[in-house]
Length: 539
Ligand code: N01
Image (cartoon, rainbow, N blue to C red; front, side, top):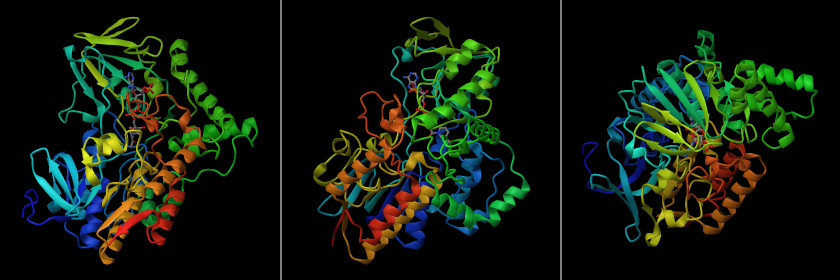
């Protein structure tokens, strides 16, 4: 059987998606449990989000030594990052290295988009249909489709009539987009826009940034890694791994055990300044109550807004950029390389589309309620139909033909972000209800994959045909996810994609588990230790 031809017998497992999660899941099921497994992937290579997100400036916001697998010492020793925050091409090289190192390629099936997955109850099998009409069969269906892989292209009137080129950052053409001599417009100032804008400004003749919501950003202070640091990572891999497993966000730094309100103004200022100089996401780890206490959060917000006003020369532009309507880090906090400085360039213009929204796009550019902006290229850095978009797009139906979109009509309901009631033997890696996007993803992927692997080993050795999340256990988990979110400032943001509020018509439910990675891991371990409490196991 070649890796693209259908097997004669149903497989043990089909994994959808060849990003980090799909690749590691293939390795554990195939090489540890000896199961027959294939990975179906729509693209023609591995990488998932890093295969598609090739926009200028795309790089990781997690420090490189935390954005890698640690389950294998040999794998750790076989790789070296070049920068503190690796760029997309280097991350994609790492992904390909993982595929080769673990000899995964014979079981990766590329150019194969899943368009439907149905649970065949009498045969206890998942039937998975691809865009070319092939039907694959397997006992277990494991979705490894990532949290941020369905592009959110705003439905702006007239987009089809635009005579220039338009692109979404997450579907960047592989041949690149030539910005030289062009009038470029960027819509969106989230993490992606903030990475892309400084690089596009250097390439384009003129750049217009359309800002709906001003955003905080901390300087990344990216730099090449020293040989000493590279050695440090290799020699301390176990400690680094242990640290990431203990921290709430699965990063390589601890949150300081102090309140922003228990120090003097001078001490607080000095702490923020040191974190600003050091750069990166650690800024939010300076105090332990920034995400829980609005007054504490205000101190960080004031510090950053003041920095923006110092960096940006034109007071009107500085005012627009620092007029931020939400608490710091209540949206995913971006980090940047010279984002605010970019607005001091002569070829960059900031347009406030909160006060004067976009009315339409015409053949020549963007029309707001105030003015027309002639453009050759429009870049949508407008984010994703996050966490549920890619799952729903697969047309999954479970027991009795229950469609996932109907099961989730009021928002996603899962047990631990791992299973959905009514969908036996289906597992979701970093699904809604797990910490997922609130964490550095590789450690969480390792945790999810290891849990699923141990679980499947248990099912196989105990002769269990079906495993399915209990409805009451899922309802209780949804409640816990809700309570964890409301213990923080996270749900206070309008337009937050954590809530699904960025996609018109999407139910507003806080999707990721905000109780912290370490706590979540403990809960999952506990559930397994109690014979998979909250799941029905049918022999
Ligand atoms: O998307 P976003 P993103 N008209 O949804 C605006 C990850 N990531 O791609 O805030 C006009 O955060 C929207 O405005 P508003 C990371 O987890 C990871 O930037 O809704 N504007 C906002 O400004 C991140 O959080 C890395 O008012 C519209 C922007 O578009 C996640 O991806 C690197 C609009 C969207 O911001 C998503 O970030 C980069 C409309 N109709 C990103 N619709 C890593 O390092 C939306 N906007 C791993």
